[in-house]
Length: 546
Image (tube, rainbow, N blue to C red; front, side, top):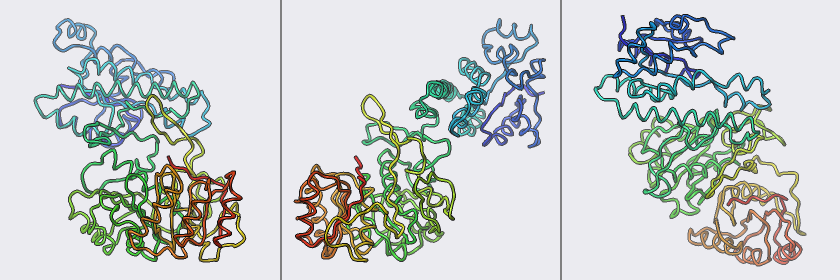
């Protein structure tokens, strides 16, 4: 007869069977309910139904099953108190030594949208929180596990002599877990849907190497039920991620997002969250070389995102540069062998961002498959393809929430809202360069000016307090890289407030400009472009990135 008992009742069954097998091998009797009991039996494990322990059948379609003294006395009995143990024996109850419970999927249910309150309330767990609270209160004697990622650690600790520290940490995790769960329910009932599923104290938070600086602790908390963006990345190699790595990875995916529908390989090189080089090419190695040529100095210690699997040729080129992170949809085995020779580079996989797609984004598209569009493009475009506001940014004392920006997709066609503002229209070659430049400037910090030609960036002026300074910086960067600006195009993420930016562009050799328009001095800016025989296109849309 097993000497110890474990109660397992989980909605998330990942790792459950292996954990249960490990407990059974360590002489634990398994108690369970409902679907968890079925899953364990199907795996060939012996399970005792909780109803057999309580002597009372489940009621009200499972609403009442573990709310019974036989369960809670078994959890709360203090093993060093003879009177507690005598009370258990007098009632015919037994101690419960381990509880593994995760709660009904409330957040997952309400995230579906337009969920009736009656259905949402059925996913409010009562018995689960009660059991894990009781076990956490008595954690000196009872193991309590709410996160499947802790299963292996608990099994290892059961084989050791001292698990007190781990028990205490797991108990703390319980109360954070319940707090986040209750906050989600409260937010739903109060109409605060943006808050559902997120708490900075949630146990799903991942500890990072450090924050912006080594003396700042930091964690990362996915906001989605189904991970997307940075939360969906799989790390294959390298040191654990830091706060800055995650920010730069987000910036790299954002910069690459406009190329979700590109039929050509694209590479974004990002430093301090903004691109220092971006290009398309006939193959990935060519695209990388062209992106690197924009600013090879800034590329040192960068994060690089690509929209094709990394081949050996590209891997060899990447390995010649100190790179913090590389993110791609996959890696050839030989390419992976090349990259992993460097122990510190972080090699990550972004699932499904590789293949060109037949369809193009339709107006108002919210992420459903249509016209042959694959999830490949949806991943890169995940900043924009959800209708509800879901972009969060913290400030001291609060959190800002907004709808994510819609990438200006580089698909080989021009947005119908674009208008030619000058006497001269762009040539066909200039149109293609303008489309590329407008897509590329999307990921650049404001004030942003980007010079481009032939499908690659030539100079980038980012994060400046004035637009003319951003223009001068972009020209200077191109000069430093010895890149010819004659016949190039310029993209500005917001309108030119004065003509000086256009004059500076003309002096550098720019022949066409794409910008939102909308300034009180548009007439003055257009006049300057006409004087220089520059073609200027208005998009009617601003691309600020603060």
